[in-house]
Image 1: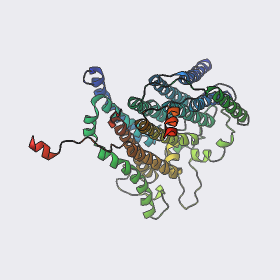
Image 2 (image 1 turned 90 degrees about the vertical axis):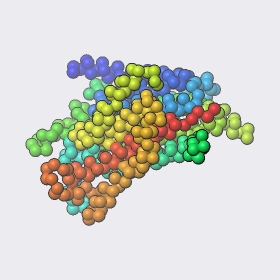
Image 3 (image 1 turned 180 degrees about the vertical axis):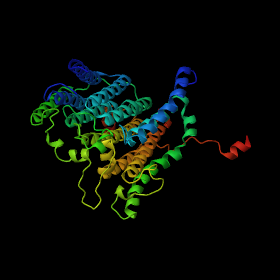
Image 4 (image 1 turned 135 degrees about the horizontal axis):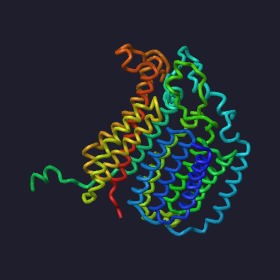
Length: 197
Length: 125
Length: 145
């Protein structure tokens, strides 16, 4: 693709992201806000593809635009459909948000330039993972000949973290089941009632 | 490859983050707060993945030939931020599910999901 | 949803491909983008689509809630079990280099490859089961006004 085309796509996706976010702020009707959040997730996934992270893009698209949207719609079906008018806090919130934003932008001046190949995070452990030559403290030399480096790091080099995260998902599932378990299920007719009728 | 110069990418992502933050602190409806948290979350993911990008690199998937030939590796984008964010996304949806389950229970207990009405009801009793 | 003919027919056509795509993403996670997390979510989306179009009662017959709740634990067990198996074979926890065997040389994976496959399978099973269980919890909750 030519330089102009990539620039046009980048600016288009970024501006759509910004416009969607600002629109969600002003939406009072919650159904539309949830749909716009799904759209925001999808645009975020597209931006991740442009940033060369296809694994993350697949996950974000499936989770954000699929599961998350469905969960919020189910919650809406069980509660209200519209939010109340804006409260008195909006002016001070705006001030807090702008101050935080300015501080964060001030913090980015120390960051390496976007795309810099000599940034510190690219120099220490990442080249070892990409070249499959991780020195091991035990006798076994951990050589994982797997083409997808992200899966290799996730499942083998950093397997402990993945175990912890799986347990977190397990716990969250158990938590939702406990919160929404039906304590008094509708009494279905027992076998004695059925025999009598 | 995004061709916007220098730090402009980070600033746009920070603006998205602040939009999500604004929704969380200024809106009283609980579901709106969860939506704001979601926007904040996605922006943080975009920030991390932007930090991992290497100019002129491709996705970190090695072509099968490189194992045998031993040729110099082409430039790859850093895989580590992708690994972190991958698990963060699924953990994020799990916690969002828990938050929404709590909202359903709050609605059944109080009859409303507006924060100020819930606080008023709590102070009356 | 009995009157939404287009939705029902298109879902019937699409759901097998969604599930097949989930298996593809799961087992091709080593060679292309993919892995356990993505595959679990896509697999659950197939079931959620079925539940939304054909009704909750029908879906509960296809995927009973008791089985789904057991699967949540099975996934974590498979993951941790791989680690413990490596420990029993004499190495550290989750040291896949010890999972060597010589059955069907060249066909079955062994070593690091087998370890990664089993671990991603465990992750995929847990994530899919958790998403379907959350769907059952939300959709099965009656409107208490």
